[in-house]
Image (cartoon, rainbow, N blue to C red; front, side, top):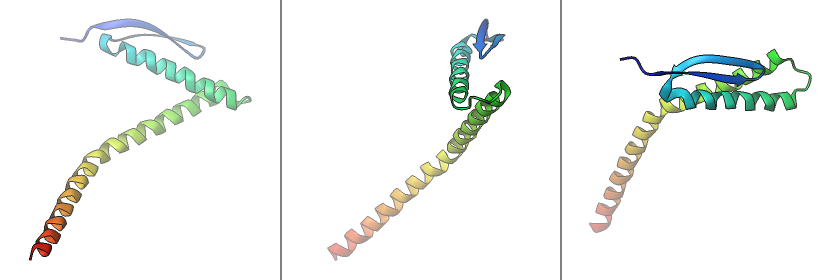
Length: 104
């Protein structure tokens, strides 16, 4: 069964975007539009002579960098967790070895 769709209209910059989205994803689309508008305004305040196209390129670049950074962090998380477990095991073994040396 296909997910229920909802028709929404978003104002992104000077553009109206009309689309059908999965009902449960509607808040994500609205939040994304808010983020796009905020980042556009951020660059617009700092780059007074930039064209709209240039500003949108900066917005897109920033969000793409964030996307890749998040993906990299997620891909390294399992490795980091395994290293934590290994470090705990090593520390435990070293502690046991030190404790056995003291008892003797």
